[in-house]
Image (cartoon, rainbow, N blue to C red; front, side, top):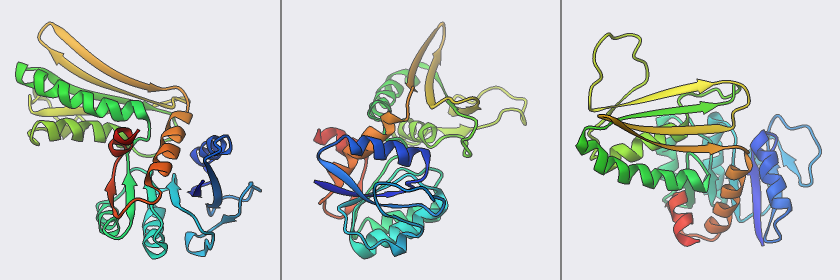
Length: 253
């Protein structure tokens, strides 16, 4: 039985994860952390992670970027592996995360969906073939009107995956309105759309001469992220210190 602390239990994703776990006989949420949560849940809720005194095997984090540093300190102090699903982390927090991973297992992913993590591999393979044949690369992401960061962490992860496969030969362009000039072949355009209740859509466009190849991932429910997070929790519990990714989870399944 994998015992989970849900960091950010009062948010939308916290509720979805709790519902997934409630129907899984192999894990349970033993505590939650959320300063905004005033509702009664099936487990004790702490407003501050430092006050949580419940023993657990792993932490799932769907909170806010400003709360992650305190979570990392807690994970290191209690030696509890943590899955960081929160995006838009600062460079300082990312450095903190890497430092903590030397003492305890940390899994970080911009997107917990199995499909998105497969897409990360597919766009790398496509870029290696298509870029050398003159294809331009553009990424368009769409999310609901309540999402506060743009572009999404997943869009950046897709761009970074492509750039890694191409030996960091690309630079990113987020806004073309300030310059009137032709597109640089060595750029990846990244565009954000916000509206309605779109759960999440990412479209990677490879545009060549007389042909276009598009790879799209569309999430129709937040459950795809929760299912991935729970799978990651089962994988990470008991793991040695280190920095892990969803690719490790997929390879283990």
